Length: 202
Image (cartoon, rainbow, N blue to C red; front, side, top):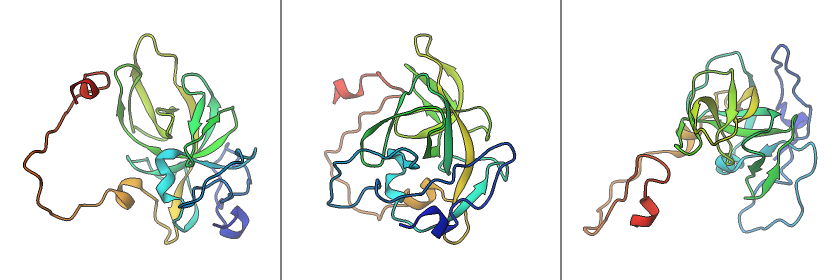
């Protein structure tokens, strides 16, 4: 993995948003078969857990936030504005990193319905929040009455792949599986929301 300057990782600027010229370091990215003992260094752009499998891909630049609306699965660079409900981010190394205003990380746009927390959708580049500690981001439509307000983030730009296209987690990783014979004794336990009894039933 190369640094920001070597990769021209941050090439564009969104009016009114200052993107920190931080070294995009592989020092804190996961490596197969290798553990980590050192904690994250201040000023390093962190990969969230949700995007951990994309860390080995080559990258081009950051697409301007105002270029086009996001769609579910779009991978983006965001900045923390205010920490409320989520005060920690789970990084690509499965570490809990304390979040402070100004911290930057790589997250992914997605829809979420968590009846004990937030109902949220991918509606646009404005009014964004951190929906999960794993790094999902979107716009909150409603929340449980006992849940605190969501942690607020600002979109700095979408990640582009080496070919210049917008990097999308769904398109990269959620590919049709090969057809294979299923076992006859397969049982599905399905619930429409969190705390609906799936684990207890299983």
